Image 1 (cartoon, helix red, strand yellow):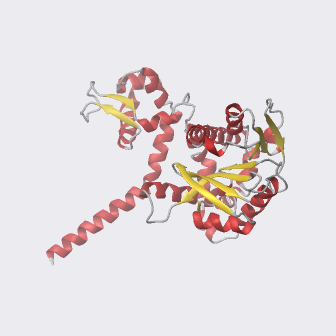
Image 2: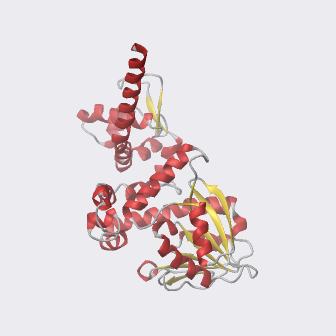
Image 3: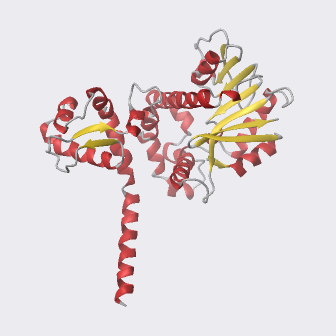
Length: 360
């Protein structure tokens, strides 16, 4: 009986710790956001050597009274794998211990071309986070999204009204585009070979197609987005900007690129987009194809659990702020069949996301 009670107590305490970890998980995000807003990764990076806590306090221009608080902030970020503390001591006053960047924090540097710092600031903006507070209310009403429950309008409408939020999202999309382009042009160049033309739908300011146009001067590249996004942008010899609505028509090309577009939209809306894509490209025999960069959610028994967890967290974010979702291969295949595409190929080369080639 005593053993059973002991086992029960252990399970109870373990369950309690599990719940507390979930309750406080937002502190991880807020601590990281705090460090980024204070530019701590950049300061440590430019210091060039392990940075003592006292040096960091001075560089940040903080009052001496904040020293212990900064130590506590850095302690959780060291534990979370964003910084490395050189030396073995735990005492904040041990002068031989200094802070270095961990590999993950290099992706938070302002000057890093592949930085995801803008994504962090966009996702953790209160305007976005507030919608997550209203999930339970949304489940019980008829609003389209929790974001709509919170703000009375859709994300895209509010972004158009708030310049700061619009800047966050534009920078986040451009940052992500640089990362994706870097990987694709390095490891998947074959996806562009043989093309005469390509149109990047929802291409923003053209980060992806600029790189494609530079590396493949014989490909005619088009950046297609809403008129207010592309108006005034200047192209080049093989790059042009066209304004329009992807739900109404897409410029014709050998290939259409959808980078992180489908996950923003419902199945019904995706079908409308995919139909316009199919209209814009020639047959498979004549070299036509659709190139999609998006998540393919793994089954529970597939792949690393951390990867799946991140994909599922992305899916919950999509549910909170837009009408879309992250989809499994089966979900995507159903969309492709519905629109009349004949075949597809998935290349899981982008970590959380995959390169998907779809043929008419």
